[in-house]
Amino acid sequence: MFGFPPPGHPIWDDDFLDQKDKLTTRTDNNSWGVVLIDHTRSFTPYHNIRNKENLTRCSRALLARMSALTAGAIAKSVGTSLTRAEITALLARRDRIVAFFNEEAKAKGEKNVLFG
Image 1: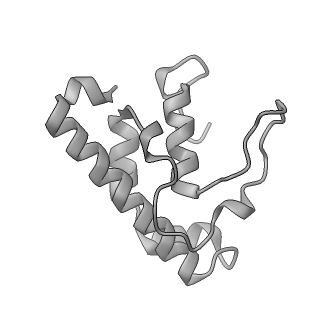
Image 2: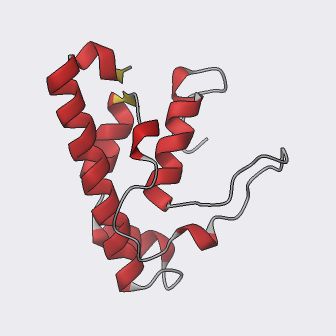
């Protein structure tokens, strides 16, 4: 479904989920074991990455998809659910995450940072 790998694939590890939360700036945690179905509070006009130290690895496919993401594609996908400021902030966080992983791969070696 939606072109995602099946459960058990490395993309579903904590690193992937943490990267998604950094991209969306989700601040409420899942400590009660609640299944997240709503991320509407995640799309704030915050431009930085929270807890950047938690970013350790990234799937090559995810990095490529994040890199290809455009404001137009986001706007088309979400309609009027996000403001221009929220989309701009999302892309700013994306830029920081992509730059971070590119720098990490260069410094530590691609095989130590990127997988898949």
